[in-house]
Image (cartoon, rainbow, N blue to C red; front, side, top):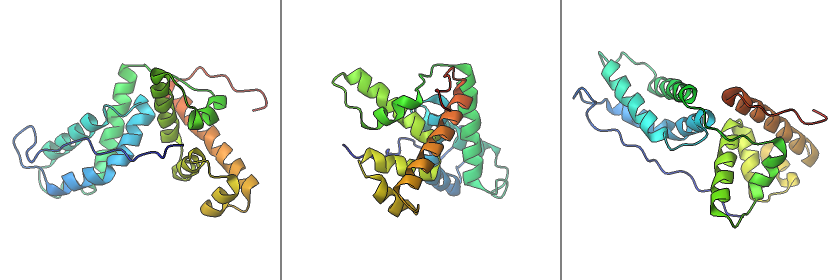
Length: 195
């Protein structure tokens, strides 16, 4: 399987905001630090990250315009993440265009290979959306499974007692991620038998 590449930073925050005021360098540095988290927030709500750079740039511009004094925003990272989340939710409400996945598809998405390019792109989009709904440990375990690492090694790497407990915890994390996915996207998915 191919190893997942880290997304490149595709946003640019200019030296001056839309009012012509100089942007505080701490705001630009905070945007750099939160890029991956902001991208995952956008994926969680909008099912893709194409709008993430635009949303982060707008949040930084808005924060710069809102600053009366350099001390008016105490925590730049938290301010920007909150702004990105609000904008992603607003855009989500404005446009519902998400494709949903079943619990059965999760393992297939991690390793599925299709000759059809469009299906590959849809699978990658669904996989990234699901991954964004996992917690940090769940994403780590998911990435290891995508790399075909067996549960015994995953248990050792993540601090679980054995392979069985690691797999069980991962499935619980997947269930919670699906619940988040359903909550954010008003899914019509039915629970599977035995749940």
